[in-house]
Length: 204
Length: 204
Image (cartoon, helix red, strand yellow):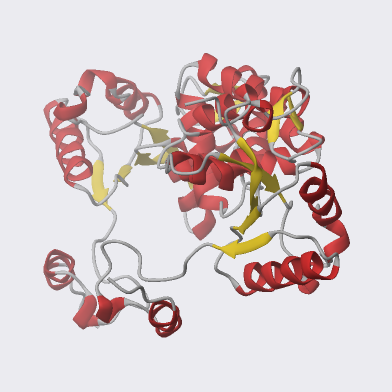
């Protein structure tokens, strides 16, 4: 079969197809959109992608993402944030979700994933030793484990809790409440969520 | 609220959010994927996007997309393709879909869209005069109108048919058959598709 698309378009489709969850049809749509749009649209997107790695780095204390010209996450260095309270999250973007609540005034610690034997991620790949160090250094009083409500998130939470106990650190360990999300009818809630909601019921 | 994400990540999220159908969450996921992947992944994607405009151009005869160093679409210049048969499509990518069937040995003509008063696209924005010229120049015998099965596709098809008649061109005008797609149960076919299928029924 003769070549059906120009090489550059073919290449752009292949490249965009590497994005998570993007199949060939979606990649075609993206590439064709960029081709039809103003040349500057593609160029400015390209520049943003190139800057991603050079202008972003990881905070050496909290492992949040920070600007390359910063030393430490502003969410940690900010004197108004309570360093004795540490929310432990899986990924940097989880911080954004928690900050949007406006409820949490402590600091964050990014694990960098969850323990997942299938993906070959053991506890040694996560920033758990650094968490234990922070608990000591900052005289932390409460660790809020805010991993996802997945099997990996749950087992990682248990693993961290056990490690904190074994290290005989005098710190309260809590977890985000599991229960029925706002706006969801009881009849549509799954069995496990309902079990959690029952277990965690609160006296009015 | 303090800045939650590094500037470069914020910018990449905004840029990726311009892709069609990509909301903020998906854009975050794409940007974070590129940040976690090898630096070369983002760079090679960026290079592909930049090359899109410089290395792709439009064929002056068929309006298909071609390499910048080509003069005419190889699907037109190829002597094995029958120039007396022209399939008229809306967009360049439609050619790929038709070529995949391996059934069509004629040439293509890309309209560059459909007549759509809502989007301000009138017939003058489409490559219809060039089509009429081709019909004359190539002594075309059949025009297969392969626009989409949408309201705009249908009205564009009618418009082209009328124009060909008015220009008194001696050419057969056909349309892609409408009917029940392979693998679809009758009970799930919509009313209009079923009407088309009845109308276009074939004697066995």
